[in-house]
Image 1: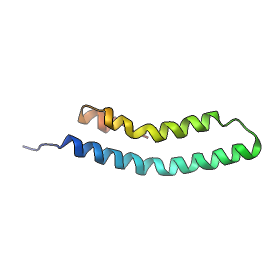
Image 2 (image 1 turned 90 degrees about the vertical axis):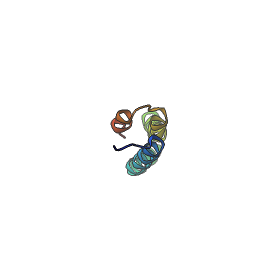
Image 3 (image 1 turned 120 degrees about the vertical axis):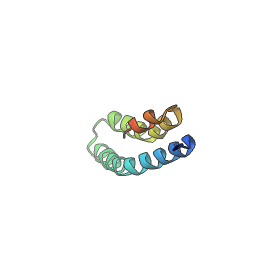
Image 4 (image 1 turned 45 degrees about the horizontal axis):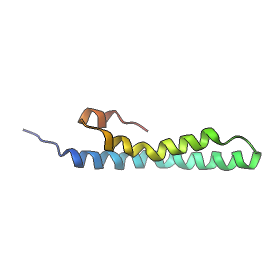
Length: 73
């Protein structure tokens, strides 16, 4: 019988999410800088950056392995 350490599964999921969000955050940083330079509205960029930063909280809130598997950046 295979048993899964749920705390370890959460930690692994968080690391995966962090790795996946890194290039997305970098892209948003570039978009933010360009928006500042052109005087464009940065509201959507700021919101997306915050969503990406908060993504690991979804792993903390998960109560089943299936929920962990469904979390995507």
